[in-house]
Image (cartoon, rainbow, N blue to C red; front, side):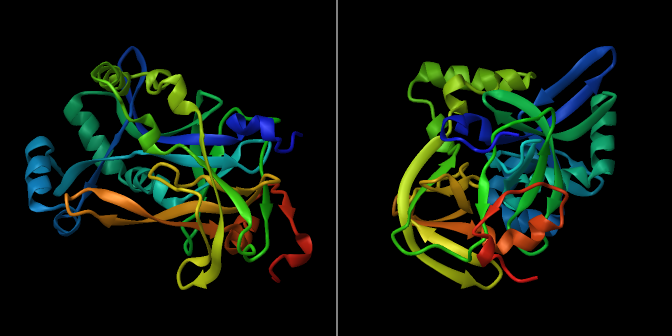
Length: 308
């Protein structure tokens, strides 16, 4: 069994991509880099502004009385066992879990499209290779989900800290796959990225450079317990959209928390920018949730483990 090593990060930090699979007669299964879900009329009006509502109503039908909308996206996860168990944020896979519950919706869409079957799918890219994954546990209390990735054995993985927080000025690094790092800089890149997204093969969805994790360094600013969120670590290592679910690690490679939130503000021009407030859910808060699952996690600081 291989423990986490600093030269094995590309195998231990994964990009999570929500997708959809389509079975057609006498044809291999095809995959699309998005999924569909339906929302009630009340949720539709609450979630989208009037302009977006009009756009969605024009482009997507109602299914079984509810409005069909696109869902999905990408995030980050990290291995916590040699055999493919990984941790991420619940909000990274929430659309996938919602779509999985909508079997009647997917059956109706498959009938309309005249395909054999249509169903949501989850991929994790480790070391540049897309692998099927499943959500095996999600917390009722915290923004946490546990994944099981297929075809993984003897992989490097992270150790987790069981302490409540970390002293101020503790040096930390946030690892993840922020969407901004995949932005196109030229029209040619934009064209190629669009072509990649349209592919029905997950191996073609990303450029090699897209699948290289981003590391941002900083230090702990504050550690505190917050209602509904458990112990939260505030730090200066930048967390961007897409980095959610990634590990916040010490210089020794021990995971202190899951990179979960970044405070933002709206500029005068309507754009959104970060305000330098990055928050990670402490692994301490997840100790009992993780212990509910048959996963061989390596905890450190055993003497400081929460009491049962």
